[in-house]
Length: 119
Image (tube, rainbow, N blue to C red; front, side, top):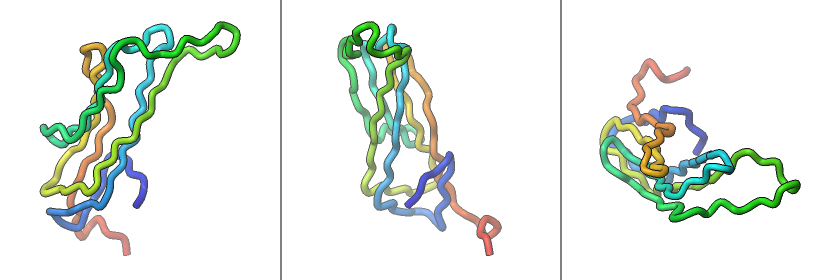
């Protein structure tokens, strides 16, 4: 259990992670809402999950004077349970927003070496 930056080292492959949760945040100016938004988790070249979030304008109308927001944010959690990993891999997040691919973060799965261990 933990929070990971861009690398997760395991003792050896293959490995079965009981659960991996990925928090995804997508931000856009409030006056330019997405009309289409698909979020994908891609392991190497395989699509692991795909979420179709928006079809049509869904950004709420905010009455003037109540909120001075300049952006809107969508946050979703993607959960993989269990997650088998057979070899060193790269899990990346991408969003397809109005037919444009936006590249998000990634997590590298690697094998630890004896030099990586603290004593």
